[in-house]
Length: 368
Image 1 (cartoon, rainbow, N blue to C red):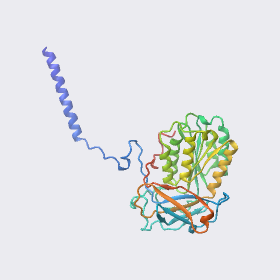
Image 2: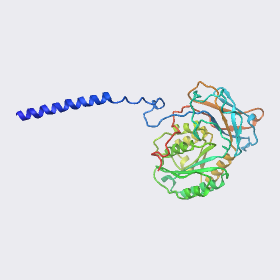
Image 3: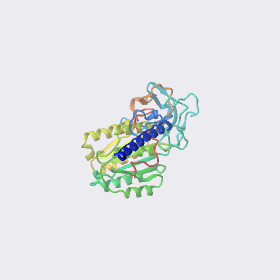
Image 4: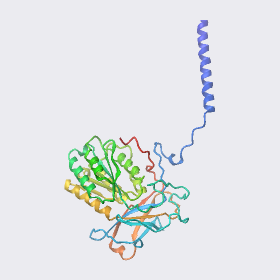
């Protein structure tokens, strides 16, 4: 009986001492870090933070017959953000060298985030100064290798390979493939043979996580200067992504990266998938194509190549704007030209988008 009481007393003493040690440990431990204001609105680990100092626009000008209009000048364009007229900082046609129109160090210019003292000067960051020689286009190709592609896999590889060969010699190309995972098959390079090896090395895989893959491609593209476009070949809907298409599309808008969606008749049979493809491409200044057969796939890639070679690249430093939310961009032609031509470009951006930050580590859990 005495031994039993001794055991109980020891156990009680142990519990008291343990509780006291835990309390002392909590009191001496440093307080937890305050939550990041940029990520306080979300429960995920992704930080939603973008600071835009210069807005870049890719603009296609089309006449009444559907032909591209060339030979326009900076004075032919008027850009308005919300209701505020903007002054162009750079102007570029096709693959020509950009024309510098404003000094980026002018003190009268304000950042789009409203905090001119905060900017991201990394090469390729949304902020920073325009660079002479930035006229080279960077083309990021994303290829669907999911099980939706079994029937037309070889034809799609041929169409992509021909597209790679047809691009302007000054363009740099990166090639990615995706099913449930993403593969960086060829990093951004001017070496066409390296890209073509990446295309031919792809094999059909499992479920399709398109928006996961597109998020990774946009993050990679955001690290480079100059004009950037993403060309996606997708044969079907997304059935495995962890991220929504709305956030991915908004990131592309805020970074000024047009998305061209090339798909097949099978993909268009899904009305929801069709609507997402068309909305994402239109809102970023790209286009969506739905090919009935492999010949139309080739034609779609040819149309993308023609579009890239005829785009005007405009940029501006936003004038002071109290709007921290969605900002509408309107690009118009001045004078008589406005009556006969139509313009295609992105329709706006958010200085601090609710989508995904372009600041990503070199590798993520989405990529293999």
